Length: 253
Image (cartoon, rainbow, N blue to C red; front, side, top):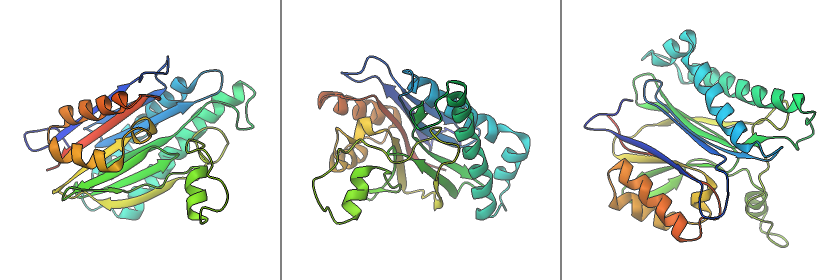
C-alpha cells in the first residue's frame, strides 16, 4: 500500500494531559505496507524503550530480503504470510525479554509493551492483523465500527465469564510483549476492503472516546491527517488520562 491520490494513511501520538512521558510508539511503513502501535509499560520507567524497540525489531525483520520478497509475492498463501509475520513477532518478544534478562527482571516485572498491527501482503487485498494486549484494530464500513481484535485484559475476561462478582479495573492487561520468554499472539488474515477504513489505536483513545463517537468521527473526516488530529483532540478534551496514539487508513487502492 502506498500513499497516493486514492489512499490516505496518517498516524499521530500524543502524551495526553496527565502523563509526563509518552510511552507509545507508532509505525507507518508504506513500502512494507506495515502499520503498528505499541503502548509501553513499566520496568525502570522504560515503557518508551520497550515500545520503540518492539517497532524497530518488527520492521527490521520484515525488511529482510527473504521476508519482504515473500510477502510481496501476489501468489503467497495466507498460511505462509501468517508464519513469516509470526516469526517476526516472536523475535520482537525475544528482543524485549533479553533486555529484561540483562536487568534481572524475568518474573514479569520488567518492561513490556502492547502490540497491534496490520501488514498488507500479496496483491494488497489481504492483510495479517496481529495483537497482544489492549491496543486495538477497528474496521469502519458503512458508518459502522467493528473491533477486529480482542482485548487481552482482566476486564474482558470478566465480561466473557458472565460478569460474576465485582468488575476488575479496565486497564489490567493479561498479555504483553517482552515480560516472559514466550507470549500468545492473536493473528488472522483479513480482507482489505476498498470501501472500508481501518484504525489502529492505543487505549489512551478508547479509554476516553466511545466506539460510537469514534465511528461518527471516522464518518465525518475522510482525510486521514484530519481524522487523527480530531481523535486525539477528543481524547484530550475528555481528560487525556493516558498517552494517545492512532494510525488511520481511510482508503486503499
